[in-house]
Length: 227
Image (cartoon, rainbow, N blue to C red; front, top):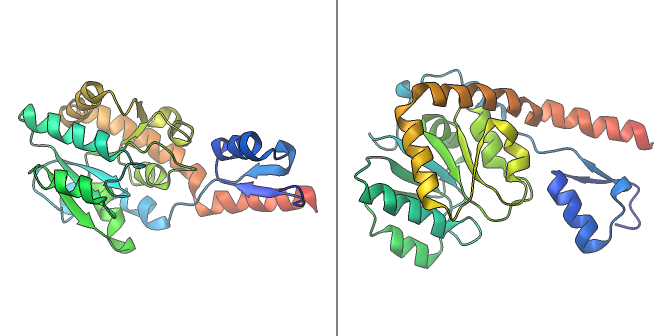
């Protein structure tokens, strides 16, 4: 870091961590963000009901698997409470899972573990969801949140690390340990089409900042400034 003329990173949060933990000079660090693939923006134009769905009930989508870092305990707590309340909302999980979390999920009929999902299937799964539920405790950026917004899907994210920065006012920021509050938000989204629509519009607008074109603009502007 001391030898670099410029350091690129993906979020103000990651920049702060470089400064706090490694003693980096903040003047040399430029935030350029992360890029969302065009397919997520394109699928926002599709009616979710026209897409092939992983289940017939409304579902929350989670990317990254059930793991401690990804808030596996919080996710399962939400699923468990939804089941106890008699809700038909499901939890669909893409990605690798920890063994303990996987065993617990097998006992919940409203949790469906997809494992590894090919990249070309992700936009459709994201677009069809009632919301992204991303309760990760530590993300340098948190690309699924930006992908959800680009796809026109409300993003419910934890109040940790970079995630509030990524979604801003266009997402729903929650305390991952506040299961009651999260379930209330989810059930309200499910019955309030207007609320879903407002977050979809706001999310798509904010996601424009995370297109590859905008990221490249920030990269090139930095090169022009330092060379």
